[in-house]
Length: 91
Image (tube, rainbow, N blue to C red):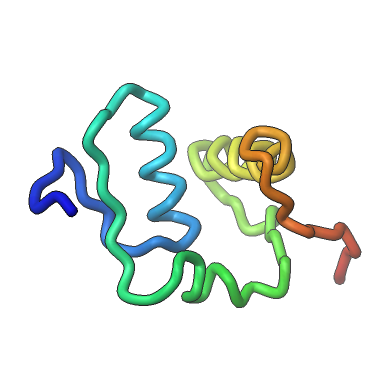
């Protein structure tokens, strides 16, 4: 195991893993993700598959939400790992 990295993400939930992924996609070679439990074991993994898109009130948040939703929907194709997400709707 290495003792240094150019970037260290604390937490391997959806935000930490996504940040590490996007940094690597941008060419960062030395990115570490540190998690005290299992990857996705925090609140990200307990969301009951709920994606909320209606609480956006500024343009940047709307753009990030649309991008995130599209990436999530193509995750299985990009990563080759099933996410078992089912669109069931809610009110």
